Length: 62
Image (cartoon, rainbow, N blue to C red; front, side, top):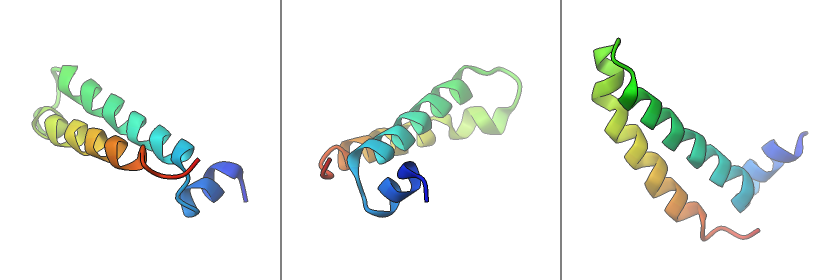
């Protein structure tokens, strides 16, 4: 089992912060693209979920 998956399963800060950061980045990309309306529609929700997730997982143990 890789360290990343092991870190996710044991609720470690590093892997979960990476997932939250990727979610925030995906939300921003969804916000900036002009082609697909449903991506733009859900971009704020995705960015918000990533931000709240980052705040929560920052309290996880190293």
